Length: 217
Ligand SMILES: Nc1ncnc2c1ncn2[C@@H]1O[C@H](COP(=O)(O)OP(=O)(O)OP(=O)(O)O)[C@@H](O)[C@H]1O
Ligand SMILES: [Mg+2]
Image 1: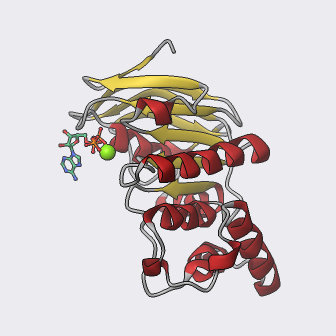
Image 2 (image 1 turned 90 degrees about the vertical axis):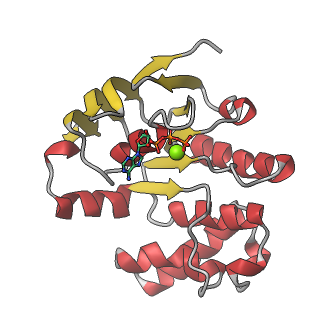
Image 3 (image 1 turned 45 degrees about the vertical axis):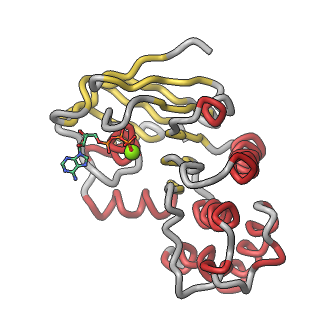
């Protein structure tokens, strides 16, 4: 999916943000706490409306669409990965991965096959029946990545995906995110405080004082 942000404003937080991310690109956004990184990611994910400005996802101006349409776009085309995993604790790993497919009415046989292959992709084929609370942080985040990919999105948004992980689990998670980006041509926008994590991206931006700047790496 191509992401084209034009003159995006969010009062008190974002000022005239322009950003173009081509299909399949991987970018990172850094910046101090409170600078609006999560706010920008929420706008990209159609979880929030800007005060003004436009966001085109594959040439559709989603700022002009109603909540019904935006909900469909979120479910079908965008995968979210959060710092705290946001898994459903009463479900096991594979049920967490399958859930978005149920919401989008994927056939049961297809759901099963796709969930298994996604768990394999993130290296958790042996943990399908494990309750997610019994998994390590790194494993939970990899379940969350598999869930983000459930409906074969064109865009993945990750907000501090390694924020709660040690160096080794961070590397495992980032290797999976990179593989997904490279092998499946999924546009990836990642927010992080960690320069090592940001270095996985092809381009790094810096958000400060409401303004987004490209950095040289
Ligand atoms: N629900 C809210 N109501 C009012 N202000 C908010 C709300 N959420 C965030 N803000 C404000 O918006 C600004 C940007 O917040 P945001 O969460 O986007 O920053 P961030 O860059 O993601 O920070 P962090 O690195 O700590 O996650 C901050 O000044 C914050 O206080
Ligand atoms: Mg944040």
